[in-house]
Length: 242
Image (spheres, rainbow, N blue to C red):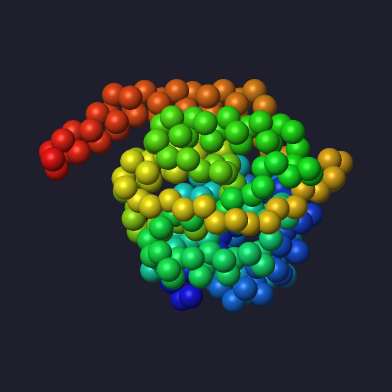
């Protein structure tokens, strides 16, 4: 328990942040919030949580940058694992113990929260994006995961320390999964619950054109690397063992 930090990268989710933090704190783990240049009431909300660590980006840098900041801070403080959870209220903080129990059984594994992407209340565009992402992940790694888009995860940050990552926004979470597989870091899904607020209450910072193009570009790059490096090197290792 004393090796695990819960981290929340947040950007303009001041309306849901307080409730999420209250529920996260009840799980008994230290908490870090990376305020990624929020311009709403986020800073005021955080003043009501003096026991929570806060790192602030002066300007919005993207979710990937927020996660990098959280990992670097946790590593410097001596933590071994970081559980990431979104601040929009989509995830259930009460599911955090599932990750704690799982990592005790399989140390240094990257645990990925697995939502029911066929759930009736999941927005159609989310279901399509998740299935598409899952497909390209499998092409790049040869591994199947039921949910590659969730932000509810446990990262073994010491094993991920020297990964060469090029992305800094939403696509970061896909890239780090692929590169973890390439480094032979075990990746395991953990079933978790999910809540989708009604459409009029939902806050999303996803920019359809720009973010979609970045994700497509990253997937093309990862597939090319997989074809010309990952799969050939994997085959070579097998032949050397034989």
